[in-house]
Image (cartoon, rainbow, N blue to C red; front, side, top):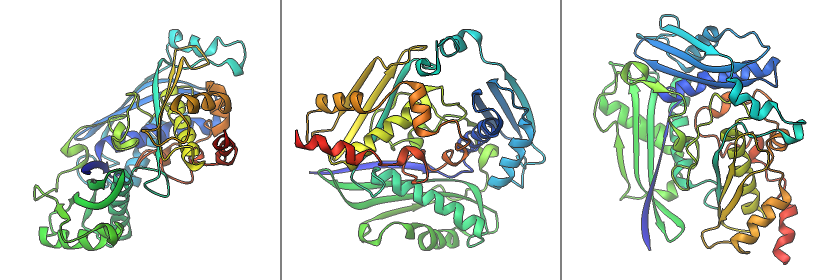
Length: 380
């Protein structure tokens, strides 16, 4: 049965992603000297100003404004009202609430470290791409990343940091068949013509999509509103944690609602979502299912999850309940164990702030080192 599904991505210079990047750059800088720090940093950017706010408990001495200006410069805002050396920056950061901290701090030992908050986190994996991600979001990220590459390399020097991409794929049942629609909106300077921009994007950016997925019926919308000169925080406000679907699986599975960027790993919003992805990817790599969604739920201050739920969308070689039992048996889901297993106290978070938190081979939760061990259950 024919069906269409769409996912989107945004560039590192999108105002929301700019805020994510600054938040994660601060977390990384803190973790370099204080691996046990508690961080919940959010940024808000609008027109000519940035506000850095949140809760941090740490022994590290951090210059928040310096980190922010360096990040803004690296992304490419060296012009306009939000220029890295001109924008106004306000810092409103205080220590973590004692009422929130006690759920984690009052653990008898680190092995019984309580979850930093209540909530449900989801993981997902499928066989559509080599990285076991949905093809729609994978291609959207590749398009957005390519916009950054051609801008910074000088191949398309008239581009500016803000941009969005979107890919619609036609499926035949569960199998991706072809790309139906490609949307690319790229910020640019005033000198380039729309004709030149469209020509270059089709040639230099859309080319990352495998030609076998494109045909004469594929539709292309390049800067469909026409001019896109005003972008970034000058064009629209940005906020940390507002691109949660871009960050995860492009809408292909459920989302617990918690954002990732700016948070240390005691926040299960982040660490348990990474663990859920790790488990799902290993389940698919082991051949237990072709597609799997995993939900893990926690109560604040409690180490063991209150529930584990598996849905293989009918693709499981074992029942969903049996796979859930295997997850509980083979994976320690207590926060301390998750943090240690995935090495989450390291300063690794800036690289997650754009183009998705999943599907990047360098990240520890993308390993499939448990797949061989899980294959034994196929003989049940």
